[in-house]
Length: 387
Image 1: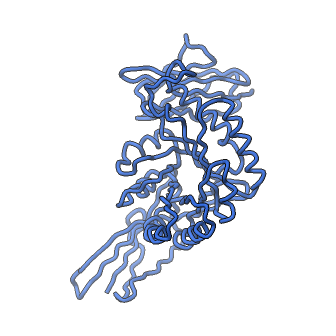
Image 2: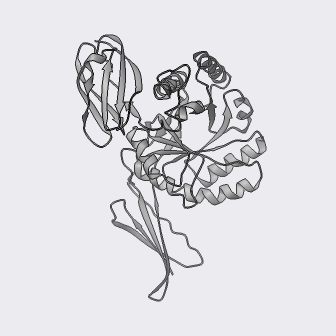
Image 3: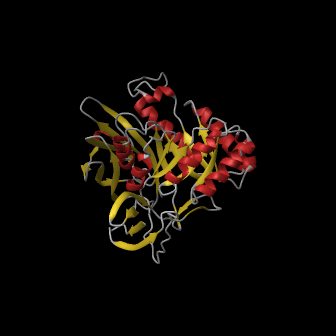
């Protein structure tokens, strides 16, 4: 006899099913399920299964799973449980040691992780479930049909994780792509399929009819190249108005090293890294039909992110919130470095600047971070305000 027991996210036993060992399936009905809500609520249920002979337990297994509703809306949003959720995050290169990297994602107030690596035990989806981060997984396609065997092995592991939002493939073979999308839709309902391409060759992907296009925006950092990238993306959207887009913005290699110095940025790459991301955000971040924007990898060394400000703040004093892993931060407003505001630390990664006064229209806010050895500008942003 196989005994199944279903437990609520609070650990309360909800139901029990006894089935014959030859038919090891159980069906449970939940009248008012507790939904997994990402960063707001990471509710997960647990099922325990026991193989018994008489009173002896011969084997047992326990798995967790989450329940959520997801859809891609016509106006270009990922919708989680009926609420629009713009996805933004960073690349995770190594999934073997996810602890520090995932804490950094949360500290940055990100809600998505983009990766092409999963450890054999698939711990990354479990961590994403717990932290409320949506996972975009780039499947390592070889173009061989053996990919489908590996995909079918992986899907039962991924589909019980509510954090898994997209599985991406890269192939110009339409038959291969259609089979890949079909297997994802059948094996993991609620997980979307994305066809990967560059912003110049996305047309070849659309014949396979994936749910979204994953665009690699490999800009090199010059201002006129950003203009060209914006023009190419606008042309792509005009040619395919019904498509939704995931954008992975990969910075120049020189920006991976905070100690390198770029000839166009004499103060080093840290400030240049921040400005590069601002440029890419202007191209993609506020565009309709961009479901997710992921940059990366994470800015090495210190990082910081300013929280959004209300629009009607001109002439008033407000509190400005930010997220960072640095021990000390200061804020400059509109170039007034002689009167920097020191941050009050609210928690391990959350800071607040009290009583900051903004002028009407455009304000330039610059975050300066300091660690034990150095100080650098790590975030610059312009805010538009009105009375």
